[in-house]
Image (cartoon, rainbow, N blue to C red):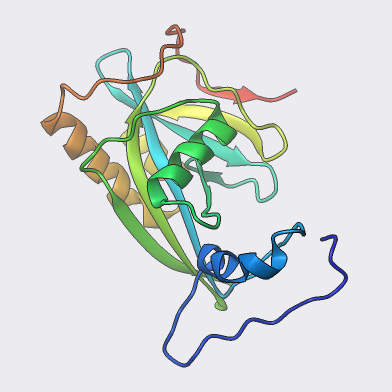
Length: 193
């Protein structure tokens, strides 16, 4: 952004790098500048956030301000960040929760954007209490939804992950939340003003 030149990074044949891997490789040269990387292979990490107030699991889905689509808290991996670090950072940024991620829940989905960008999304699982504090610049609304409602709102790629979360939660009912926000009454949809 504050460097006046664009650079093209080309990988050797057969080597695939995502934006975080490219950022780490060029850090020595770009560390003094604010750098934006548009990569053909992108990687994001986040979490399936849930709560259980009424005996039924409710999942947090976020409405993206830019696309008006519903998704889970997630975002791009940054240079030198692990998948888990990215997931925790993104949940904190987008929803305001400091979370413990379930140790043995990690699911990956892959898809293409406009036929040219290859996207990998890694999702973990975290139980929370209370209502989210949204990142207003990116998120316009949120909704707590049961598994079936969440699958109606989310892209079909996410359906197996919601199903896997339901199974994991049922099999690991002792999984406890870290977040200590007080529990509030569940509401359907919350608009940002």
